[in-house]
Structures are given as structure tokens and as C-alpha cells.
Image (cartoon, rainbow, N blue to C red):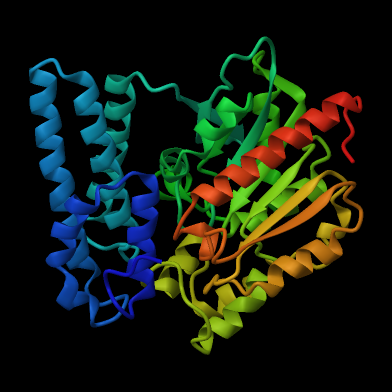
Length: 391
């Protein structure tokens, strides 16, 4: 993994995720120079300085984009807004809940995203998914060259990502090239659902996943008999949990296994393994709406796939990086070994030879995206040939 901040895994992870979304290394290197000393004090101490450095970079790009618009250079403006979006996103993600400037950075990120889509005429649609008396938002990317209703993958977030991050990684575009649509969602516990609507995370992910299926069934461009689900990071728990209890999901993929996330919290209390974000304990209590550590630690054990993956009766892919420093590789083997009812299960470990060895292949996402999207496309084709059943 590219490590501009030696010894600071959390900051390095953030930089690598930004690069996977299209950050320009020359731009972010200038911003990183402003915070290299702060990075030596650990993951938490200098995050406000990081916000100022990366947020300032994004602000400058926004001004440059506005000048491009004035000159009629829409596509150049769109690209600058894209990079501003992901720099705001990265800076905001690093902050503790309640940090001054965080809400402003998130609002700027949403605006930059909207401007980039509009000016660049990007093939993505913002949608609303009705859910238990309210709704949560998503981004829909349609399959390319579809002659009729197309298969669709619901893409869940993890603990600390957002739908815009999923979009900019490019996996939805990879699916689209293979004739598959994607619905990327800010489900309860992440993104707008958490920040702007107060929807906390929940262990029973089938609740919000079923709402996404309900929504997709209303779309004439989606094949309701070919809806699958994929999740990365903590989505490696959310997606298989949903597939186990929502029978309308026909396929499942874990981009990074997460079999026993609840139990891992005890290890993290002992400083075992790496955290995904700074200010970790405040973050998880915020995500799951828990008022204190005792309440969170009582809630966390519910996030476990023992007794769950055995109920998955659809094709199931599990991928994992051999050097994942957040989630032990044993989690991938355990999910695979227990998914005995799946008619087609596969475990793919990314190695130094293939690339993509870190958590959700943050060091090199191309091998993971290619493998996952090919596997999903091939499996949907097998299901179609078999009359709706794979294996």
C-alpha cells in the first residue's frame, strides 16, 4: 500500500481510497506536505489539520471549475468538481463526529458531486428508496446497451464509506459494461441516511435491503428475477446477512469478508488490528446510535454471521486481501466454510502476485473489481441459461 505517512495506517488508507477514486497524486502530495508532521502524532491528533489541507485543495479546485464553467469548458469543470468531491469526502471522513467544519465539508462534497454529474453528463441517477415511513438515497447506474430489463446489483457501504465513494471507484461502470445495473445506497448508518436523516445502523440489514429490492421491482429497466447484492468492508457482513433472509436476492458477493465483526470489537479494545477511521469509538457509537461504550459493546455481538451464512441458498462470492490489517483472513475462510447451502460458492484471496492485498483491495482495486464483476456477470448468465438457477 502507498504509505505517504509512515506508521499511520488510518491516514494511509484514506489516501489510498482517494487514489482509487481518481485523486491526482501531484495534487494530494502538496496537501499531504502540510500535514506530514501532524501525521506522526497518530491517527486522531491531526485530523483537523488534514481537513484544512485537503479541504483547502478542494476549495481551490471548485474555484477553478467555476472559471471553466465561465469559459464554457463543461467537461473540464466536471472533472475538477469530481476531484473536489473526493477530497472533501476524504477530509470529512477523517473527522470525529461533531467536529466543527465536518458538516460544511460534507455539504460541499454533495454539491461538488451534483455539479460534476450535471456538467459531465455522467450516466448516474439519484434515487430515493422508501423505507419504514421515511426513505434513504441511492445512486443508480444503468446497464449499457441493454435490450430489455437488466440484472442489477445493490451495492452496500461499510462502516465509514458513502455512495459517492462507491460510485467514484468505478465498479458500477464495470458492471454496466457487462450488462448489469448498480444501485449504490446510503443505507441506515452511512452517508446521508446517517448524517442528514438520523438513520442509525442496524444489524438486521435485510430490513433496508428488502426496501431496495422493493424499489428495484418498480423499475421497468430492472429484471426483478436477477437482483443481487454486494457489500464491501462491513458490507461483507451486511450483504450476506441480507441474502440469507431476503429470498428475492439471487446472488451475493462480499468484497472483503466480515464474518464476526462484533467479536472483533473486543480485540480492538486490546489494540489488536487496525482501525478504518480516526476517532474510532466515537464513530461506531454514532453509526449505530449507541449512547456509550457499554451500550455499544452490548450491541456489537449481534453483528455476526455464525448461523446466518448457512441460510444463503444463492451463489455467493467471498473475496479478501491476504494482508488485510483490519479484518483477519480467517473471516473469509469461515464464511466460505459455513455457506454450505449455496449452489455456487467461491473464495478468492488476492495475493501479492495478483495485487489487491489490503482491506477491500485499497492498495489496488483493479484486480478485485475485474474479478468480482466478471464472476457476477458469468453467474447471472449461468442462472439465465438454467432458467433462474445457478450451479
